[in-house]
Image (cartoon, rainbow, N blue to C red; front, side):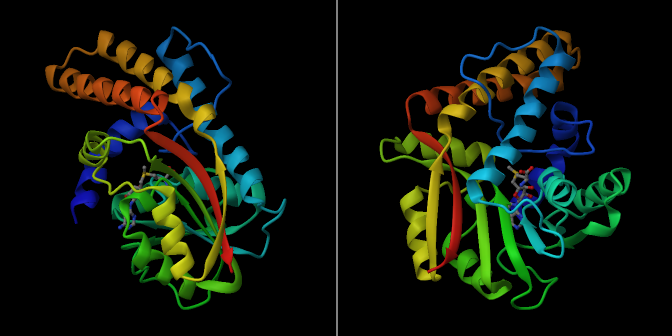
Length: 280
Ligand SMILES: C[S@@+](CC[C@H](N)C(=O)[O-])C[C@H]1O[C@@H](n2cnc3c(N)ncnc32)[C@H](O)[C@@H]1O
């Protein structure tokens, strides 16, 4: 599977930039407009990761997540290094199954969960989100997916989720979407860089409707805009102190990508939204 190898290879760099954990997120953050980046690498890193934590609070409020999920079972689809799973377990008391493609990511999440005293509340499933081999039907009260649906065949995936969810279950999505004004280059650069199949919100709505869900949408693009300038600044500082040629080349590619994203956000070719799907 192409994305499995892609993410396996990225693990160390994700931990370097968004670590040290135990809650490591690999999704956008939310920030005050015009926020200035710190001039020191470690402070800047903390600013970036705090924004990712703040995203969890903003998302959870917009999705209408109850103050307690004690006794509720949540599936975190494409859980990455588990930041969102641990957040839902720690802040809301949920029992969370983190679905990962890479076995190694599962081991990392297990370690972080133990470090956080949440070992009992976090289960690991290794597999493909279109199939989720680890569970039975109608098992979940909620499915959460942060910046992973852009990798998936949404039509197939949502049909699958409708079987995994209990009757009153809900799907919480945070994702990047193409807008109507996006150029074909914007889609192809984004997909090439991230190995995704990014889509429009409209296309998600069609898949959701076909699977029997009604959707609530909240656009949070503005709040995420500073993520890319902070990220570009972090890369510049990291580049300035990196000696190894191979790592410098990698940082240089990341900088190009961060600037591409910043431009794409500003020119409104991409948007970020929080979706909550409930059975229609
Ligand atoms: C941008 S990362 C987001 C990680 C995590 N949700 C977070 O917010 O920190 C996208 C994740 O989707 C996962 N992913 C992509 N395709 C997948 C698939 N077919 N099945 C399961 N996970 C998948 C990747 O392994 C990666 O961890």
